[in-house]
View 1: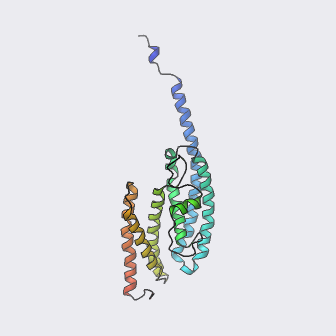
View 2: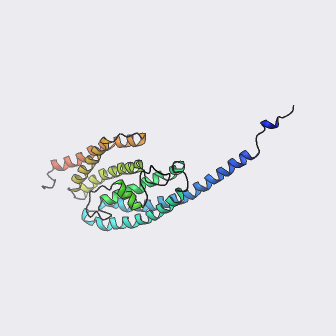
Amino acid sequence: MATNPDKMIQSGIFEDLQRKIDEDTAVKDALRDIVQALEKQDRTTQSILSRAHSTPTSDLPPLVTAAQANIDHEIKTIQQLSEVASQHPYYKFNYAWTRQMQDVCYSILLCGWLGGFGKGETGQLMKIEDVGALMKIPVNLKDRDSFHLTIEEYLLALISVIDELARLARNSVTLGDHRRPLQIAQFIKDVHAGFQILNLKNDTLRKRSDGIKYRVKEVEDVVYDLSLRGLLPKD
């Protein structure tokens, strides 16, 4: 039976597809190396920040300074990531770094809450624009396809900070610091009220934000126990 030459598959189709696959693989490899370096740096930062659970408030400044110094290294790595990632479609490859960007954002927000980045006092919430400026990258880009910090990454990081502060409230009592749980309670309540304003479409974000109300209750229980024991600061 004769073969119709008009229906034959052109020999170059799959060679062209392989070239595209090889190009994507090269991009993924380049991104992976940078993201792994960023992840390693942030583990060090989070290790430093975790010492806040065993450090009195008055002794926090050296810890915060050490965390800031390591975050400076992370920002340089983010610049490398931005340079490579911005050469390619953002939403094609953002899965490769979004979790690490959330982690870095978390470290920055927690460090800022503890008095870092010139805040001078604990209990401050850095806006997404503040975090983006510190990272030296744009936020919530709509007008071009380029590397940036998304609102979802910022909000997920903030929820992680809330979880960490709820734990810090309990450990502060162990350290004999009865003022910090009050500060944390007010902060978490304010953030919870803010999240209630948001109409969240992201399923993961919505589910995680639902957990904030449990953190509110946890810290309220800590404050209530202090009140029963007459340990709340008089002022």
